[in-house]
Length: 174
Image (tube, rainbow, N blue to C red):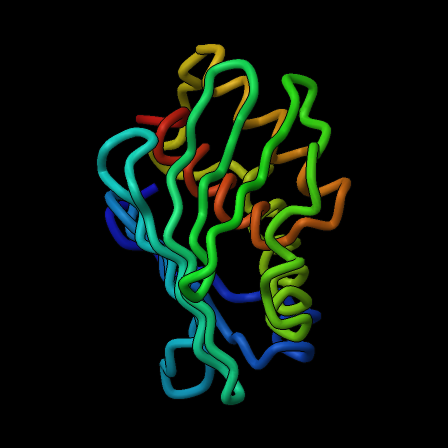
């Protein structure tokens, strides 16, 4: 991936959410943008592996801010604070979701928006990307990938967005 890359949102995401495109910065973050580059969601990821990161959404008078860190090599745990309320998402080694996840703490409309974003991110994960050619084979990366797949199966869309970006930053490099 180049330093900054713009990718169009899928037609389904555009219709459902008003998100027209994403901007990815390989070093830190992604943004979901609407018409006239209005910010709808921003995901800023710590430069430190497993460091504290922030996901913010501001759309249709609905707001959410999730500050989180990811821990674990075998079991992946997302320790999060959602709009000031502590929340924890845990995945077993095989990717199975242990608890109710983040959707319990977030407005259902925002959670549904992340179904669309998650679908787009998963499609991008499978596509060849500039600079994303080498997989860092570690138990942490394998755990992230398993947790990402488990979050997808469980419909835990906010976790999909969080885990997908962390996987790209920590485990894929040029």
